[in-house]
Image (cartoon, rainbow, N blue to C red; front, side, top):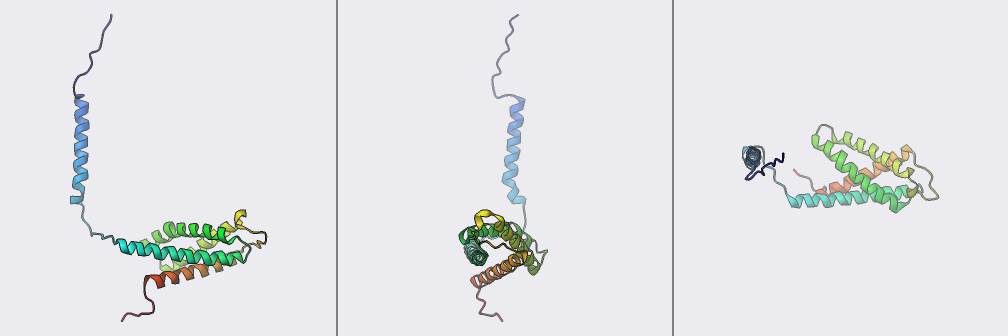
Length: 172
């Protein structure tokens, strides 16, 4: 017995209809959602964002430069430390400091203390890498790492303060 199955002609029947209906519902939902959403409008100011990025970049550069120079006295490669600390400091700022700061649950002084400790741990990590050490490397104690981190963070805070406002003017 040689039975042949006839080929289906047309749009696919019930299955195609359901898929078309789902696409229409999804498209309607996506198009009408902005009309149903409500809230406070957020206005993104690109000039302010660019100036923030410039200030943050120079604060990172100053902090990384000071930290690299101070760690250079301990026998570490200044350029390698500068590059490594710049990127680790940027990651800590973006993924630890900013998210916690935006929650407004932790005070800024307590958050700065946490960041000083994290930066000191990053310095200890960088100091443990052979590529960061010169022949005269004398080690890095926790006390030295915390003091260098404290100095670098204080300096970057003041750079950010000075660059973002005019601290020599007081408002009445």
